[in-house]
Length: 465
Image 1 (cartoon, helix red, strand yellow):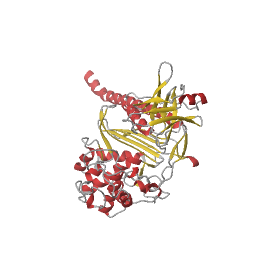
Image 2 (cartoon, helix red, strand yellow; image 1 turned 60 degrees about the vertical axis):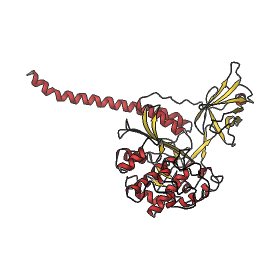
Image 3 (cartoon, one colour; image 1 turned 30 degrees about the vertical axis):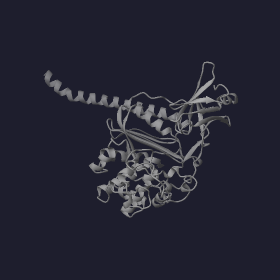
Image 4 (tube, one colour; image 1 turned 90 degrees about the horizontal axis):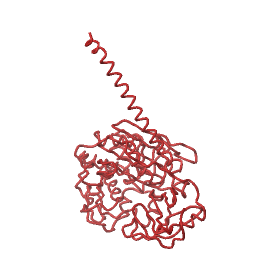
């Protein structure tokens, strides 16, 4: 009788245990979502983030929320279905189009650029694989003196973009190393897609990638996007706390390397299709995800010390927009941030939100939103000499005061507004790097710490509070 009763009650016990397990899991997920939202809010309040945050674990959404305005002048709010330009994340889709053509037998990774265009230095040495892994040695179109004022202000095609570097010498032997992001390489890949398919790049991408993977909200901006393809309007920082419309550009001038618009949901669908679906053949997928090549196919790949795990990640900035995407295969965690503010905050935020999603330590942001007094500003002004390993080798960087705000002036004359965080501590709003004034015991400034770099002081007038 007792045994029979045990048998009768056991299913109910299992159901009850499962119920409480489900409640606990829901409470944990809900608590984590609350923590993610609390983390994001300071960035939103200080006009440093406006967009969508999406976090998935094992294919299940644990957080998704839109913030800020897609068009501030009309008070149109961002939603979870708002489209954003995704800057360098665009390279993932260009690479996918190339690999789809490889899978179809229309293209080979070891083909040379000279099979598609003449007049480019080293074209007979540069392979499609070199272009995909950003080891081509091509000169960077973004570094051309007329890039900002001419190239970006005119309609372009992949052919005209590649033509812009015609006759210019290679920076290094193709295939020998990775130097920096190769925008020109992905312009050339877009041209290869066009020549192989006989279609304009936007149409080819739609046929090869977006439609087959059901990425219905995604596309390549070739300057012909219509009103039914609404994309958020881009903004850029103005001073320490303001925003202004970003400079208008022709997105066709970034074809292949930064012309894609998409939603957070479509980006998550793409990540799932690449890592766990059938977006590519096994051979193409292995090539794209091979961590032996640290950079390539639109991804940074390898172990991230902070998480102690292999990660695939990419970030990007283009006029008015910034983006971040990260995938951790071990925990099947996807983190996506798309923003219509030109800022590097998405990378800092993305890393912290990943830590939060994994239950790891992270730093809650704290910003001081007020103007400094004139005496405080004066005490912070001066010039600092950095070494040859700095971002700009041996640069002299000045702290200047203007309009009751502190600015960092680069050798180029560009200005970065600084957000006060604590006495003598700031954040460079343009690049979202920590800045600190270091002083001796008497309070005299002796150095400026910018990220991990230290510049020695000269011409410093006083003490910054």
